[in-house]
Amino acid sequence: MAVGPAGFNPLSLREVSFPTETKMGGTTWLIKPSSHAWAKAFSIYDDIDERREPWMKAELEQIRREAEQALARINNLQDLSSFRVEYLGKKGKLTQILRGMGNLPAEERPQIGQLANQIRAYLEEEIEKKRKVLEEEALNQRLRDEVIDVTMPGRRHYRGKLHPLNIVLNEIKDIFLGMGFEIAEGPEVEWDYYNFEALNIPKNHPARDTQDTFYITENILLRTHTSPTQIRVMERQKPPIKIIVPGRVYRSDAVDATHSPIFHQVEGLVIDRNITMGDLKGVLDVFAKEMFGPQTRTQFRPHHFPFTEPSAEMDVSCTTCGGKGCRVCSYTGWIEILGAGMVHPKVLKHGGIDPEKYSGFAFGMGLDRITNLKYGIDDIRLLFENDIRFLEQF
Image (cartoon, rainbow, N blue to C red; front, side, top):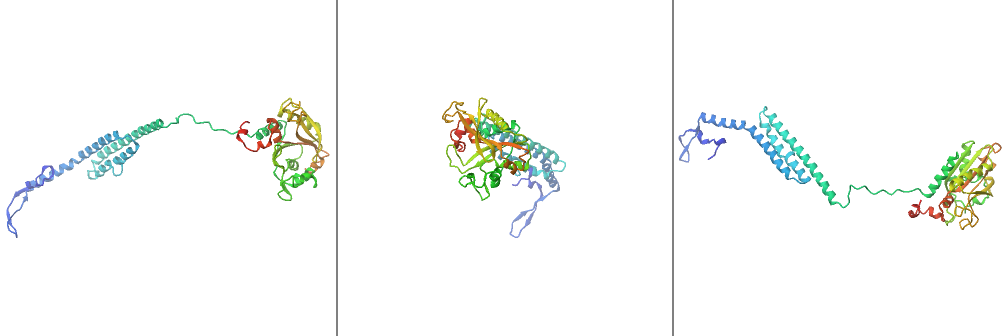
């Protein structure tokens, strides 16, 4: 027998019954409910609607208790994510309950909505607390599992060092800057005019032979010395001039212990009124003592350069034996380090300077040679091979 809500029996609605005839024969009972019975039935359903709000409150509290118990059993972040979806997702348990709020009377919805939001906020807070705990546990587990202690300081990065050529070049710059010189630069790909003609090197000079010079075209070449910068500076700057010109130069030489097709020079030029050979000797003597030590002695020997007149080569007392004589200095006690002289009047004219009013001196040294002497290197090739075992000694 069917039973209605709250134990309501539909048959209790029967007031009178009487037989009726059917086409198939037999007797049929007609049940007619009384008005009192109908009123009682509808009052029961009204009681159910009145109890809907307490039912939703109880359901929300039940969800909260279930969530607390489920959250306590979670021990990894993946399960925590699934838990969030199960209870707070679009199809989550809490969301499904809230969808039934539309059946509540308007005046009752705020109370249920407030309770639902409180439970949602509570679960969000508990999930966040759980997440922090699980993340910390996961990190601690990683630290225990890893062989390397990640809290220890890292290894110090290897720091490179200056090349010995750069070390010596910086020393040379400091010495001459301390004497009032300036640093000038010029192009490595140079015109034939600046490299030869302007420096009083005639057409038939041996240095112009293709066996000694790298020509790019008939009039363009790789500079064979840093001296062309002298002319370029004189063209754009009037005396007084006091410069050094460090740079790379090129000559067609076979590679051996003392020669290379690529090497480095440092050029010097001073032009002013009343410059003498004594000024040249004084400047270079100071340089030698600063570079090789105060015990260093110097001497000048006559020589010939087409761009200076008079010309000389400067020697320093042997840096190995101190002038006593050894294999390094060929038992002479002296080592040649540079060429120098008074600037030739023709060179001054090519630079646009009147030799009747001004005079000057110039010098040029091989940076590679100075470096070898300073550090006792007996093979120039070591400076270009980039062997770390060699370079890390400086």
